[in-house]
Length: 335
Image (spheres, rainbow, N blue to C red):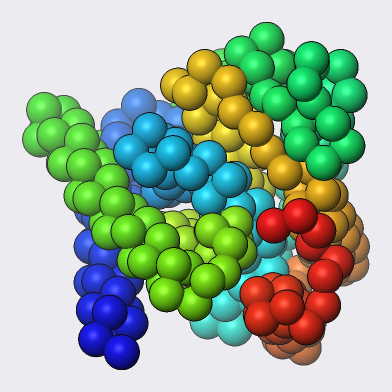
């Protein structure tokens, strides 16, 4: 019992550290974007998204190098993507007068995000079928395979760079560059410390309850590491910056799938992912993506009723994972 309480206390403390780090990061990233005159869509999809995705990137790096648990990091990435698509837009809509989308978001950022989901699934499939030692239950990811999603993200950055090159800044602020970059770096270190704490708590709880690390990654770590995205998006929506709110969600997910997981593979040299566990969870991610696109495209806004539906769908996802963890159902095989 004491071990459970200590782990829960560590998880809460680590989440608070991640929250504080994300607050510092969001502020410095916004000021730097205005200083460099970046358009709002680029600010949300690249600058804010990459910065707020640092907890997920840290979860893959730390779980792989420090704990030898690559599946824990992958679970955190997939779970975070589902949390970002369903919970963050819902909270943003509920805490603002109305959350409006644009055709540009739906037809560019959202569609490229669908491509990122497909690319990652193809990489998993190639690792299971074409890499020596891969089976229908285990996909072996190698550096050449990791290069595929990284190259795809390069295309995503290129597209936004093209938009930025045609943009004329209307509001350029004067900032202390050294202080802002130092704040940004300090925030990233703070977030990394918090992620290490939440990973240790999750591993301990997994050992106590004799449950697989993948499930703790896809639920507890995913929710904790998604706090920066939630903080940035909800605040942006409350301030009427709907474009930043939604592009941050899509940009963050794109970065997580196309960069965070491949980075873990490159650092480890090679990594094995449980293909039987990845298929159903990636399938739910694809379903959540379709729901997100359909509802945000309808009248180009997300209503309060639709937001409640998003939260209900995420609750069903958590219930599914809990039933898996206690062994009542076995749709996620081999974990």
